[in-house]
Length: 482
Length: 72
Image (cartoon, rainbow over all chains, first blue to last red):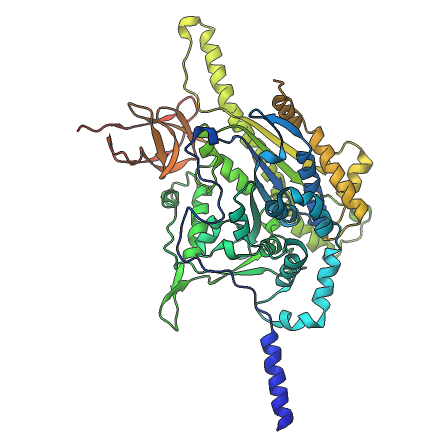
């Protein structure tokens, strides 16, 4: 009898030790002026942005983190004369959008600012993160936690990042610091396949308060590489905070049958999807149709991290619309720096007639659509630049044609506010030397790389940035050239 | 990208989908689709708002959305 009692107590203790994910807090009441959001449009003309700088950090594990960090270092070391003061290009960065490995330097810079440069390499880049995560997963003291149905390997990883990298920091600290850049860590909604940015505008949809969410969980969700790391869970409280959608959502739905802007209608649908409700059979009360949201690696939806900024650049219907700021004449220069750590590992597959194995086929087929989508995403950026530039070309072309027929034919065509758009790309494919390029393009995707590799990545990020033609054009303009 | 001019007798803020969008009589950019246009809270204009499907414009031929001063 006594033995049975002890066994029961041990079982109860073991069950209570089973892990459960740290629940994101509810939002008491929707307040569009509070929470982690980009600054509202300023009323004072002297508060205009004039030069709006967006950094985009791709996925790619520690390879991406080190390359992005190298670019941050280079921007810190780029002195510019701007608005009658000496500063650095890094000081002018307004937004960083990041995916997976790129989310670590992005989040750390948002939290620690210039201290990042002395702290981040030793806290993250040079650490054997992958080995540490495996050790923790294999540690019997964590097995009971992992046995819990709502606790996964990404929850364990988030605990590790919290302890070793972010020091317990929550989004509330970023709100309190109230400084730029505004950092957007992107994960992917596993069910819908849609990008899930860690910003209050997105958490409003769940009626959850991002201020009470740890940065480590955002970084873990953004880098929850499928297979190796489990999805990470959020609780959905939709319907509990008097949230109302922005006006554009209802207007976008009116275009469903005309399909005049299917992309905008789809974005409206995605927002409304989180608020769909059903009647709970037990309580007979309304509850969210999806009471839990499972997030996986941001790279599944967009491995560059550029989709969210592109939406902000080309649309008004976005929580931090750049287009809105351009038309309000608050932006004259738009700078987008894409740090893309994509690789293209060599394979011996085509050297033999042997039928490729199942593992090789599955892993290759899984990554090809992502790579193709990344290509399209980068092309969309180039297309957006072209679209802005084409406006001015059309107008000046018309004016020139008309004025050729005599001064009486000169046209006065009203023009939208023009900007100078700089799209800068840092990617291994722009390395000139064949051997060096191949070396970087064959680096593995892992959360652990040798110190020398990290140092080479930091250095090459700086080099590629310096050689980019658009970056050189920007520097020339900022330093007084035309 | 589509182009519109929100026209009014004076220059003031124009609003698209409830958000400050630019100045009246300027060429403004907007994504294609249905939008609601108005001139803000000082209601000395008519109509109060206009719901318009914006599509097929160019920078050379922006869609004109006209507001006029309301008689006192």
